[in-house]
Image (cartoon, rainbow, N blue to C red):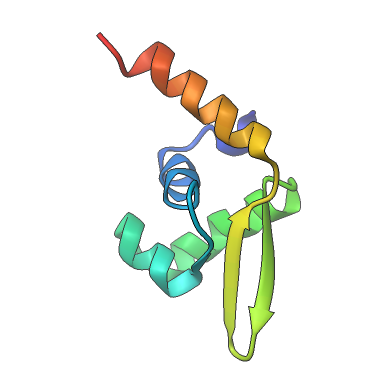
Length: 82
């Protein structure tokens, strides 16, 4: 849970909820620097929240376990609905 307890990491999970994205696509999606996104991606990859694959000089990320998406959806339902 601690690895998900950061607003930027939640934005990344939401961005990856339907598709695999490259690091650059994630940078554009969440609106921060490449180094900042990379730091958070590394934390989540090390905790097996995300998985990655390399194609030439690009790294693509996806959610590694669908239970993470269930957890984020439940959290959103509890805290983000009136």
